[in-house]
Length: 158
Image 1 (tube, rainbow, N blue to C red):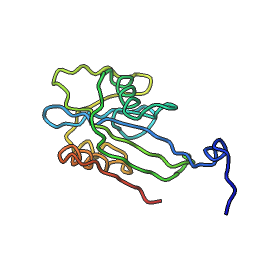
Image 2 (cartoon, helix red, strand yellow; image 1 turned 90 degrees about the vertical axis):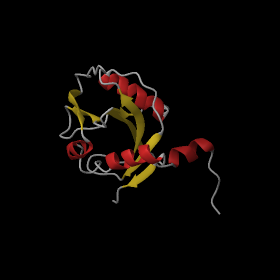
Image 3 (cartoon, rainbow, N blue to C red; image 1 turned 30 degrees about the vertical axis):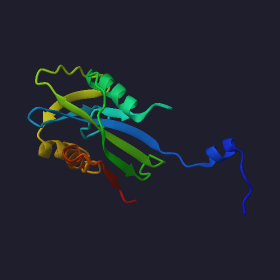
Image 4 (cartoon, rainbow, N blue to C red; image 1 turned 180 degrees about the horizontal axis):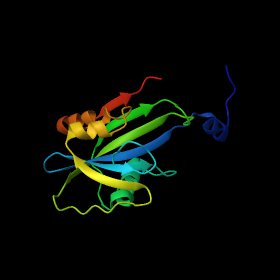
């Protein structure tokens, strides 16, 4: 039987993950809002990496405001996605996709110009083609979760 560790040592011994959150936002026609980061080849949902001790729904709302200028309360969690360490990322990553709601037709998008080059409202099929192939499965899962009220868990195999 192992020796008990003080809480500080025990917590320090636990594995850690990177956590980011995004928002599924659509217009009345069902087109999906995507943003084009200037630091990667593919488009993404508005959102980003959480700050230390930040609640995921709050971090998502903060990132949405920073990236596209929309103050929104995040709705239900639609998708949880896990990715193993890969390439330059030494730890696993968790991605949480929240329901950001349906946007009015006259919504004003203000891009965070130092990180984003563009935004677009895309039909779901087009939106899925614009997303990174390793994360494109989040979109149909999120649309299904929004329609059914049942969140989806997606896991990438290492």
